[in-house]
Image 1 (cartoon, one colour):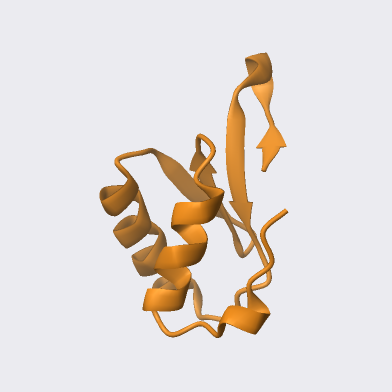
Image 2 (cartoon, one colour; image 1 turned 120 degrees about the vertical axis):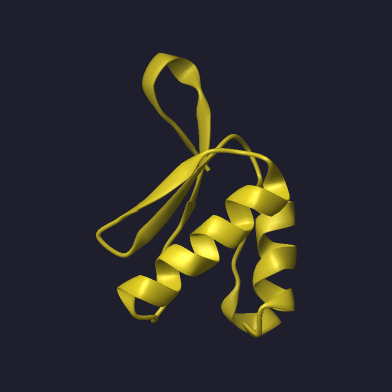
Length: 72
């Protein structure tokens, strides 16, 4: 999680090795499920708000190993 402009929290997800198309699809799926906004820039997913725990849970559900996910 990072604090961005005006002190608003954002959840940053990086290190995912996927094609840009698949990364955008995963981002769209996560935005719908978490009811938030976000974007993909340079292979990094950015979600508006503090969604660390829910994002980690969704990544596990989408086939990412639990040992590869680090919540900071």
